[in-house]
Length: 199
Image 1 (cartoon, helix red, strand yellow):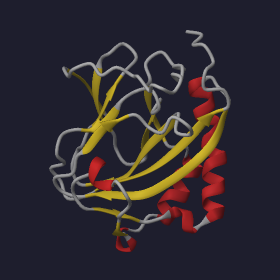
Image 2 (cartoon, one colour):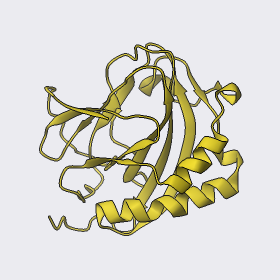
Image 3 (cartoon, one colour):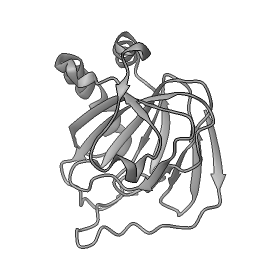
């Protein structure tokens, strides 16, 4: 894992006309190892030969280059296990009660890819984890913390970045220099998104 401070312009969190979701942690993100039982499920499922082109409405706004996907949601029992197994570690980290939202991926990014800086969905995607399963080159997640500091974070397969995706703007702003970077994502919803920060 590499963690580097960056100099980038501050981008304010302003979801107007929606009410602001309150922050939950001191920094806004943390890198940890994927729990072994969950990693085992991911590794059993993950197969680059089963990747298919990814297309959805609005994709070009976020990702300019080709992406590919192997959809774990074709296996509901695996998804159910992942949601429940990951719930506790995310609740412990953010200090709030959560409900599982979605698991998405595996998504495979190709050479030259960038991911536009964005805040996640304000109704459901409050806490997220970006889990790396395979790569052939480094590629940073760029994220702005609660103190207006930008960070470049690159992790190894088997690690994940937990982050407050609804309030910390994030993306992958530098073109990917390798040929594949494969992630899977989990998202969680606050039971009360407006709980005052207790830090």
